[in-house]
Length: 282
Image (tube, rainbow, N blue to C red):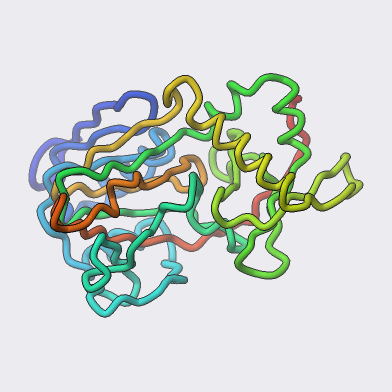
């Protein structure tokens, strides 16, 4: 497929995602290409568009609307180029700091309907500061039977909003594949169930043990199930938020004088379905 400014080419990345070339997102994008991108996001779960230069906040919002309505639940930094763009940085005067540094997660787990897509644009890249991504279906598939059965009984209770409870394991609303709804830094407890019967709420020591267990599965075998993205200036990433967990590395918050300024713009798309639990094979 080609568009007005060149051929649309997709090269799969190791483990998860694909790199897209031949598209200038700053330019008008034909409907046929938009539809191809939307399909490829579900197929690859992570699309990395290279060499995009600086995309305006208004244009990022336009692109984001290809996938649905925007959900802007975050702090509005005064340097943000648009009310719906979350500006993050390693300098508090430039953007919100320490974002994505509280553990592996999907975005919007505290919402009754978690964000369907997350979209990131690297405006200013430091010398170091990767973001890790993990494919959640593969993570579930590699669990041993005992752990898989345990996770299938768990519901996460968010620490940010009352009565937001999601099954840890469920099926993706679009692809039907098994996935996870989780946030290792924004969970106050888990609920154990036995089918339709709620057994009990975990106390904090047990909650921490479960969170550590999830983390250990993500990083097991020296990160066998993680893709570490080394950002380049102009990178634009569209992710299927419900299918890919992520975490910012500690280097993303290194001082500007050590690694240079980091500025990332993020938009998130409103979810359209609440995670639904159904019988999973154990």
